[in-house]
Length: 205
Length: 174
Image (tube, rainbow over all chains, first blue to last red; front, side, top):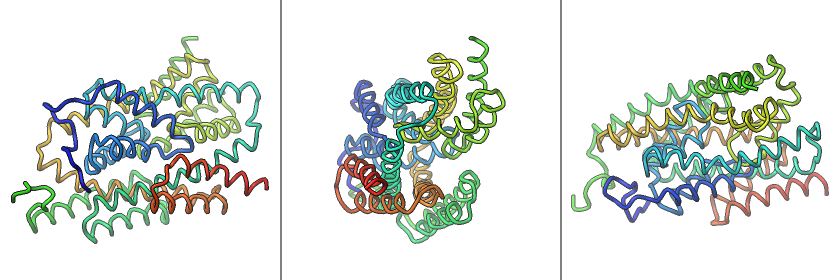
């Protein structure tokens, strides 16, 4: 994956403005009809704005899956904190949640007044949008895989995780507890076997 | 008025810290607590979950709907703050430790190790949604087509998602 500039705003670089963080996450919140929130966040933050690269995003993504709470707000906070500290995290979370919160309250009020879901075609429409949005999650997984997996062992681990969750219905948390040490071991053995790959060393090395 | 708000805060605050692996794992507990306190019936919970799934935003926004049902707007705000606040603080601490505590080498090492785990969990959760029993053959086909379109073309996802909705409408009613 080509990244023309350093991935993350380390101290000393021009920081991303809080207003821009807010605006970006408001857009993500609005766009996420049907789901696929994390994929929308990656699209805005990594692909379009280049605030971080895939490797950094993956770290935040994995960490947000490890800690409790819904993934997408967690990633938003992680990205916000990485860009602008506590204020960045708060702004990212507020931006992500504000429009969906208002919309769901309106929908909830309508539902409570009507006493039922009604309007079957609306449910069908959104069910179809949700089905397509799952495609966003899967295609993000494929893109992340392309940019971050570099050995057959890693690909094997991915398949193992999918097998555990999708076929054997092992819980997410148990799968994670098993896969994480395995992945650490794999990475550690690779690191011992050979020197860091060219992407991690200076260009003149 | 204050009583229900405190109850909401206590319920969603404690659930939020046990919501490992994406937040929806605590749904059964949420439903049990909601029914025990006579906040929602089983059917209402199901309907509210449907609403939270089709509206934008994370599915755990169902907390806002339950809060709204119990105590109106203040209830909804309380429920959302309790549901999303505590995990946000945890992420803040982790992200800080990550940016400040870890050396570059250690960070690269962890990032590399987390890669396959994150990719695996992403693909697994996408496929799990695809294989869900309530995901009928038409929905299945739409998901597969959308995945192919998004992976192989530069189509804007908004177009792909809207097409999915229109396609299911057409299949259902035409």
